[in-house]
Length: 358
Image 1 (cartoon, helix red, strand yellow):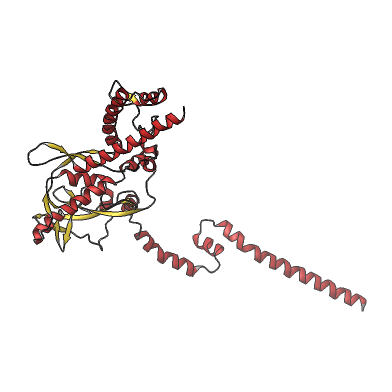
Image 2: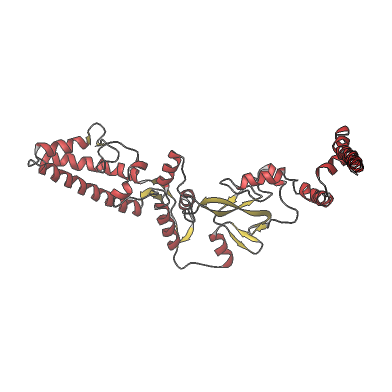
């Protein structure tokens, strides 16, 4: 019995080793077959993706669509243009970059208008990004309006003058100096470009007709404002420091006269007044005196907090009417008088302070 059991055990052991060796050889056949034919795309695909035929089919079906959407060297150019400060004008405008003209989709059409006063001229509108805190018209727009001789309502003329006085001219200089924008966000301002190589900003659209200005539209429609006036072209647009420079010449005369006739001035008071004077040029020594007694750029002066009559824009100094002789505008006179009075008050207070400091 013991010998039979031993013989049976040996037989089972040999059989199990035989089947084990056969199983090992069959498992090794897969990697060997893949390795002997590395260039076979079919075998490589089966070796990597056990059941990926559906994924392969789906990716193949997506491929034509994605490739067709990449016709877009022009699309990328258009994107780079639109992300800049100027929105790309419609096709046909001379301002349109050449690379962006091919990016217009055939499914979208840009509205084209006919100039009301000349039907042979076609026009398109386009947008320009401007700071969101800015007003409807910038400094250049408003000075261009006021430079023209035109029939305009007195209300609109006054509106342009007021807007120009606060158009942010010095704020924009400060932004340019330090490379920062006055506003974080922008909005789109529309302009009109026409085939006669002209660009219009104060335009009006009425169905398919384009009018180059509010005035032209009103005339075509028979709209006559009640307070219509003939404007005199304005020029010599002055900033606050420009008016102050004129004021300083008047201050020089007043201070010199005061020194000559007022014998009650103390030595300290006389010294303060003399330090203000530039006797050679008959004005004050410092550009922003008497607000500041040392030189500093106006955009860094904080005069908007110190000066009651500060304004951040332009005021036209002169206008020329029918007789052709330039005359000082009423708005300039008023601002000049107000700044002069303010400066005189500052000097008087400083003279009193000089007495107290003795």
